[in-house]
Amino acid sequence: MARDKVISFRTDDAHQKKLNNVVYHKHLNKKEWIEDSITTSEAETLLSLNKQEKWVKIPVSEYSHLLDTQWEDHAKYICDRIEEHVKSKEGDISFDSLFFDTKVFHTMNRIKMVRFDDEDFEIIHIVHGFGAGYGKFESQLIVEMLERTTQFELISKVIDKEKITIKIKKIME
Image (tube, rainbow, N blue to C red):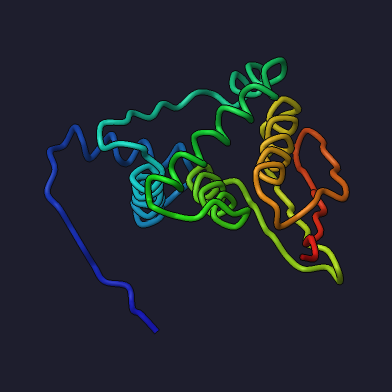
């Protein structure tokens, strides 16, 4: 079992106050904050199509509102991007490879996403809390991934403002 190690760094008083303020408002301790920052940074690096790619943060309510009318187009655009990323890493385009990149994105954004077997089916359960627009987008993204690959078929999907449950079935060859 790995043991935690103490690390430290020097900073001026102004940055120390800012760090204390950030961790206080995010209800984190400094260890959790640095782990969260590293996870986000790693995910951005892993998902970037080029080294110069920039990322932006927007409020969840704004993102959900934007998606509420553009969810189908956005799902197609994001699936194109994921597919391009998988190809750039010389990977095969499969549902699993597309799903992996999607899962990294979810980890970066603290979205709970699990995929598990349920008898003859697989269940994808996502708890996002981002609103109805995001729920529509997310379910359409999974549908896009299913349509671009041949391993699974959609059985059902249940969407609400906080979570999504999608049932898929492996296609017998």
